[in-house]
Image 1 (cartoon, rainbow, N blue to C red):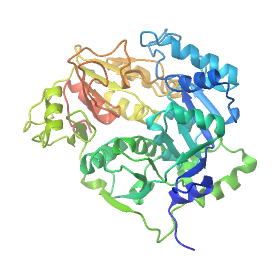
Image 2 (image 1 turned 135 degrees about the vertical axis):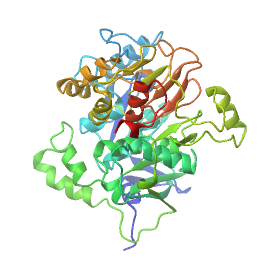
Image 3 (image 1 turned 90 degrees about the vertical axis):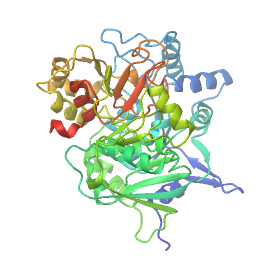
Image 4 (image 1 turned 120 degrees about the horizontal axis):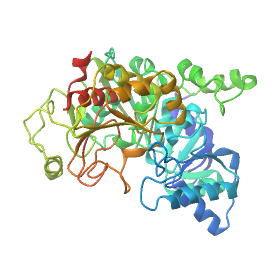
Length: 461
């Protein structure tokens, strides 16, 4: 038997048909929806008189447009956003789909609740009309983002036509320092190989250092595979994943648990399997990472100077962020700080940030916000007293949702503000018109917020 990669095994198991052009019709096991794009697909299906093929395989939430301000859970955070929320509520009711609405303790960011509810599972195919669906690869799920039209097709047929990407293995080696967040790892990879470095590939993160990552760290790692340009990213499931999933609401029950684990263990890359490309990253050689420009690839180790622009894009990025080449990022004054998003808003992220904030406070002039990734994360954090740590440090403590990860109108930071953020994108205007975003780990965000300037988190430890 020819050795096979884990990705090819998963694709082969789900292939329904091979077309003459070598594209494949792939069976889709589960679908996640959120109100910003999912409501569009469901509304279109209703207008066209189509039915959802398997309602039990579809899960919906409100996260993108819903307000995260305390006491405003039924409001939208953008002008006119109620249309999306109302449409999601009505269409899911009409189709008989599960909706984790604002009053539901399971509500939260789509890519946060899918793992914590056991909706995402190793080896299944899972799609959502959202680019960061690859987050779920942290469980060994074959997950990727799609558009609303493809979403309609998946809802109506439980299939999608896919041209199989090439395979890439990124071997993580070395000892991970205590300060290091998986965010530092993936941003360093993107900076080293470019935002298109993974284009056309399904990326498997492997090696001892990858296996040593806890599940929530793996979710962060895979979240930004799309920022690397990849079709998807994943870490093969192991005992850590099995322990994480056991007993979760939509995971296999105890009667079928051993059978499920045996199947998941079979979805490993075989010894001798050949990848189209292999990269290696030594974690012991990495420093905390902070972006300087308007793309995740515009990132340097925190102690490094801002590079000279290599092209017009980089020159324009420096003009937008108002920084000059040759100067250090450390010490750059900040106006705001944000901890949240599908990248870094899980309980482990909040615990690590709170450990840095405890007994410290941000400057009065700096606006700092923390938005938990789900209602469940928020409840657990409050049970541990983490909310009190954030509040005492001067952070706003909000309800679960995407919040200021992206701007869609409505409340944001002020134009011209310089913000350090645990989000995944630092595009022009991503957090609001004229807002200049520096992406970093939640630990770096917390320490920089306390200092009032971009700062090296290793100082805090």
